[in-house]
Image (cartoon, rainbow, N blue to C red; front, top):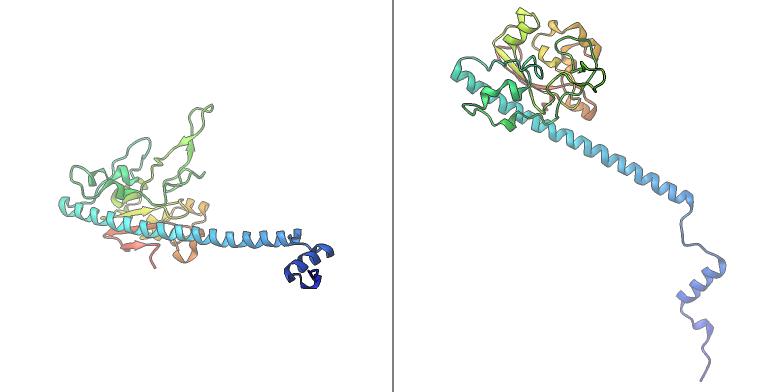
Length: 251
């Protein structure tokens, strides 16, 4: 029986032996691993940015829907009673009566003009920020006992805000703002100030607003073209105001 010819071995076998004999590698170098990790990191960063943008856009859409729903309930209430709901202060959590979940209790009982869940702000609650003491400031941390951690000086429940202009004008001592109207407000993606309530009355913007980078009333309005870094609120203005309907977040 003839002996097998080595030259007749399969090419695969010869290739494998050749690679082994010449020391050819099958793994990746450190540089290749670093380049691969960098590419994966860049792709993950792009995906995360797009995800955050989509989250904000979804909350903006939900916020606009909530503000429209609340406006409808407020107008139906006004048809029945001839006036808009007048918030009552609920010391100490909400001394100015602007947290919708408490200020608008008359919309949910005894007649249910709106479901309580519709008063929730998709963006959550106002962030706690330090600031000079004046109405319109962001909530401040306060504590009467120095040995205890500070507690919010504002009702931090997840709620839209509601400003009844006759009461609002009385609290800030601005009779010119005593107009039969209201503003319902979502704190927006920055979850910060509520200076948007001065938008119908830009000349009445408090001097302390500049402390927060708000030099004009329009600075507080959410700009949908600025994505997740856009500051400002969304609001629905109703009644006898110079501005009406939805402001901020509109395409």
